[in-house]
Image (tube, rainbow, N blue to C red; front, side):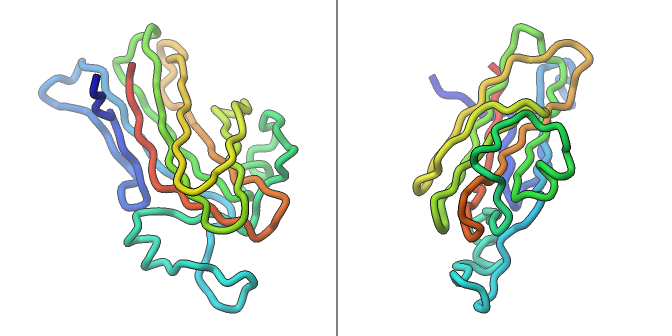
Length: 180
């Protein structure tokens, strides 16, 4: 069975919607992409040297995050949004499902690749910790969510870089979302 994503966000495509004006009551989803904390900046004065320029990030349609990872042992739910997410290397995808039944689920598939070190990605839905994934090369991580109910439209999914090494870098290569 082939599935067509309801959205696909990436560095070059940070705001998307599957809304069809010809069928306004059909289930659809929008999504917005955000990057927080420290993103990897290209320069040759750091050790280790940062491997890619902004141009190569654009050419590869990716966002490199690094140089401010969270402690990998911190798998607590978020109780200080600014300190635990916004000031750390983090990617956020906010989904906005519309006309979706509480019987539906949302499947979000994140793409990451390891650039330097051994990055861990910690996933949160809203402020709740979901799980940690080790990124080895090009990896995809699936998050499956139940639709939270009527009247709840925006769902924040956060992917926070975690490592014991300050110089760890990972690249976010995109996210696809599906209504199941």
